[in-house]
Image 1 (cartoon, rainbow, N blue to C red):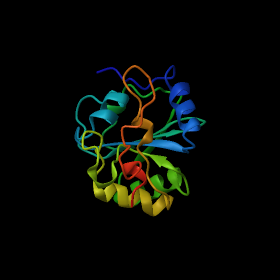
Image 2: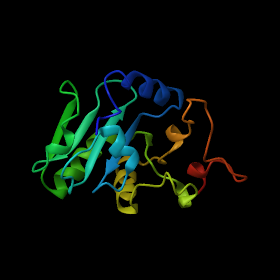
Image 3: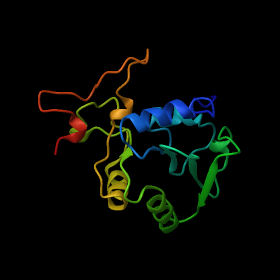
Amino acid sequence: MTAILTTALLPRVQAELERLSLDGWLLFDFRGTNAIAGGLLGVEGLASRRMFAWIPRSGTPTAMQHAIEPGPWRHWPKEWNREIYSSWKTLEGTLAKLVKGKRVAMEYSAGDAVPYLDRIPAGVIEMVRAATHQTISARLLGRGANGAERDVFQSENGPAHERR
């Protein structure tokens, strides 16, 4: 599988993050449970550890890879950052360093309002919220396949990702 997220696509993703006033997009996958992250990252081979990729609104993306599993990151551009973790404590610390105090987009839909996009486990959401102290938004994914803007999270109660 070839990664969709490339150095050529990065400026478009970052422009969308800017437009939405988000500090970055945190991709997460574990054993192929998040097809969105897996497709963007081009995950191949053994992927039995948590995988994160931080795509900042500006600057260089950062991959968080487990020390014993570099294989799934073979398509990650060499000029982009990599953080290696080998323990839960290192994972939490590195993640907190990347997202602390930031508005973060993730494949999360509050109340599972859009189940097709709700790909992040509650424990990961809790870990990210502990570091960000911000609402996690899924609005970045609210674009149609043709690039036309649409908010797929809109309901009669307002955007699902902003409902409490």
